[in-house]
Image 1: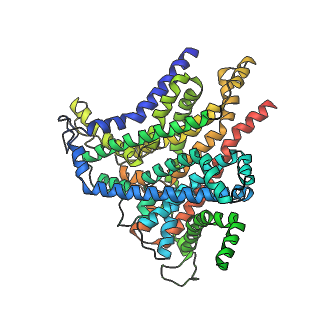
Image 2: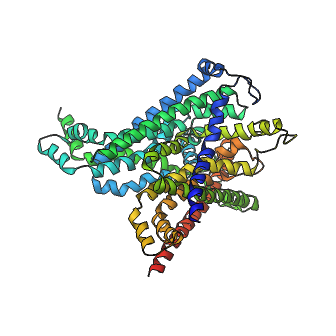
Image 3: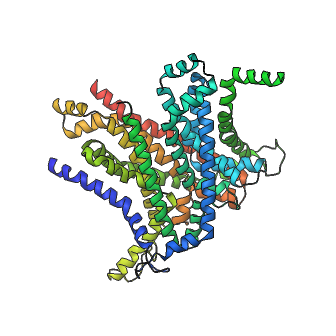
Length: 259
Length: 294
């Protein structure tokens, strides 16, 4: 019995990894397949990657996605860190629950709510409404992450800064922000990825004028995919693995620091 | 000049209030006001009726077994995905957290987080690619002569269930792993030293200690799975409506915001009831373990 279970566990783990990776692996392999219509292998080509770089639509969607993601990162980081530093600790602690709301409900409810709000005040949908939605999503992650780091900070550092005659603003920029930097970077990365990845809020709040990368992919998949999407997926996989490495590097650095 | 200085002193005196307003205002204006608006719209008679022309008729229209089946089906699928992902993820998280050599841990974790960070449409598309009517499995089976005609593997509830399981597994794995990693080996060893079997140790020590991770995982999977909209839209299974698909249909296609809002509210209430039920279910084994100790 003991022997059996000691073999079983690694097998289950290996099966799960296979389950997670087989479709991704297939996707990557077939981005090099020289066959536009069926799935049979006709030879190696990098032709889909050239097509991808030549496609105006993809670049346009990427530009929109990056614009929305960066604006949401900047907005949510600014709003979040300012709230956490300037707000009194007791009130921020009490208000924290306000920011969990967006995580506790299905995204489609947020999307429907935002859509109702915009249509109620007849705001036309576009990049701005999308940034509003993604910043809302972002705040739900930024505030808890940055707050957790802020509470761990040594209060005496902030007090020392005041004692030495710094104003609140000076303390914020030259003491608190540098100390919070790892948490801010981690939260910023997370919001960036979430915004790039988001489909539901984008689907409801972007309107017809702004097409982000997920919306483009969705439209193409629905109308019958081309291997170009495989090529795009492969590149996006590369980018996200880079981000995961960066994130885990930051995390390792952060956990090693106290020693 | 004087006014400027006055403003400056006002700002510095009330900075804690002034600077905390924007974030809170954002959250209230774009999260809580919209929710209230959805609630209000669900009572509104029609899109252009007067502000206070309130009616229950949309809720009345929802008292129909068709709507009940849609909600029940969504809840069943979400529940199945949650349960199965818990069963699949627990041994893996347990193994990674407690059994794997530290040398391998980081690379295995990296491989686990990668799909989590990958664009979710790509994850779903990769399964379409494999399961499609002209997809990889059908191609392979046809080539090998095992089947004569392609199988219909996509566009049904099984495919939907399978792909949802694939997508939500990491959401279950992460919290389970992070809670299991914190369990101290001493506790497990102490239990074994005191004569407990592996199974008893697992049931009385490991599971109660990891319950908060189980809870987090269950919520992270069940809540979005209940409102899932994109996966059914891509995988199909269009024969059966789900909550997410119907909500998006009302708001984006039929433009019937009143009925759509009412349906959203009803589904939301049922979701909350399910969540409370899960919360209660998760606390049962912990209490049972406490009782046995006493």
